Image (cartoon, rainbow, N blue to C red; front, side, top):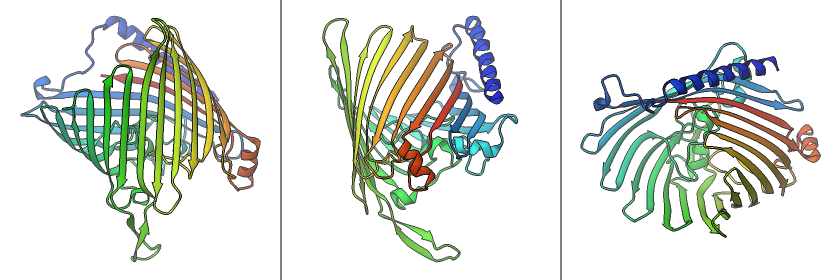
Length: 411
């Protein structure tokens, strides 16, 4: 616990130091130019100090890490529509507060405990009229293929994409992905993930439309391009053909805002996700979110249901279950946000993997236009049946608490 207090104290010092810096440099630019000036390109960075602890109530091993790092990026000046970009991604253990073995379970170090460091972005981009072509290592921002920023580093993809905005208020994007860096870029490089997608990667199409006032819609279809992959038989050089797991992902959502009068309105969002498997039953998930915003407080309710098989977002897996929750968000100008969330998930399977109540606190303070301080605490209380099955080795999970303290600085 002393280690936790030490990390919190260091984070406090960084926050207050940058408050002073914000006063002195109110008009500092967001991006510093590269060594030879903006005519040769721009250099930017997203840096973080990140503390995380995962604490279990039972016999599982706790994990904790205090890391520093982020993204250092160079992007060239546009030349006849062409632009080059590259970025270093790193997550490095700081000091001796926690061992490398303790840090493995936080997903901020590699599986063997080494630091994460690799060339995360390296792409060629070409823009003509309202069409953008991009090939290489890059971040993707779609409902299924996305950055997943829950650790120090986001997920990155090796891909070729084409985005077009010729249709008014509509984005059409098609792409091909053959490798990614895993959750939190833990792989410290790019892997194909053949067991899920097969040997040939995936292709996708994504459409977003905002033609109607107060209404928007998004849809994405992701399809594996091969149903098999090759694996060496253990202890030999013999190659065996294996069957991949996932055939496709289908996603759809829409948002609509109801206006009751000048001061009262309701924001709604409906999401649908389906996994089609090659050798297993399909999985379907439906989610509904409603938000009543005010100038100082937002009230949120949510409901979701997963049916059939377990659902696989781009990482992890969620068992068939029914969930409901509510949140309240306190806002003070544009700098301060404090969110309290309650979530209850009831399993629909005999293994009781996802059967819990979770309490969350999320505090976000924007120090200035460059830096942000954030603290997130999640307390997950599994049902007694889930804990019993876990200790018997028949399913279930243990109670756990996740603590994250993050200081971010962009320039």
